[in-house]
Amino acid sequence: MKVDESQFIPENILELQDVNVSYGSIQALKKINLIIKQGEVVTLVGANGAGKTTTLRAISKIVNCQSGNILYQGRNINRRQTHEVVKLGLAHCPEGRRVLAKQTVWDNLLLGAYIRRDDRQIKADIQQQFGLFPRLEQRQNQLAGTLSGGEQQMLAIARALMSRPKLLLLDEPSLGLAPVIVREIFNIIQNLRQTGVTILLVEQNANLALQIADRGYVLAAGSITLSGVAQELINDERVRKAYLG
Image (tube, rainbow, N blue to C red; front, side, top):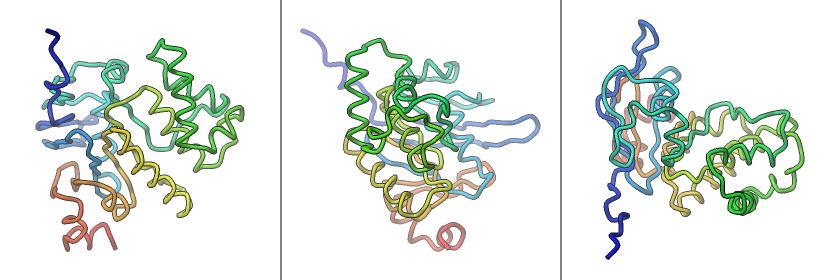
């Protein structure tokens, strides 16, 4: 009888254990411990320079941690390279969008599927992204550099989803966008949860991020100072004074 391996998937899709990251003599992360469970939206809250982006970069193996462990679906990925963790089901949508400006929307989406070889399913997934992001379908033959900031952000998220990730790292998706577009992006993030994607969100708009998250962690000077259920953090006086205005 064939064993259903899915029953052995750990409840925690990601776990950081005492993770330390340094840039030369500057210690950016200090003994970071966090857990993300399957299907959650978890947000990292903190001021600029607190270590939020570095945390995402350490998870996706863009930077190496000096000590500690990063466990993805129960596997230690400390020694993995970026392309290897993408194959495992982890995608990183970086700050600043970073679309290929001189390539079309369609070609940017194809790039997101670079680890895959199932051409028919890749085309089907592009159509699925067009369902999530109708504006991208309208502009599929347009150069990405000519899109608006909001459309580029949609393209960056759609491109990350083309690898069929189980865990999506989103870094500042609302940065530089008009409020009406920010609401649209956050509606899309909430819809992604319904598709089964787990999300770790770094976002300058702490109030909005906590409103859609299940749980949150507060980072200050490279250390986690608070963590808990998102609604509790919204109501925490320390968080309100420091990050919610």
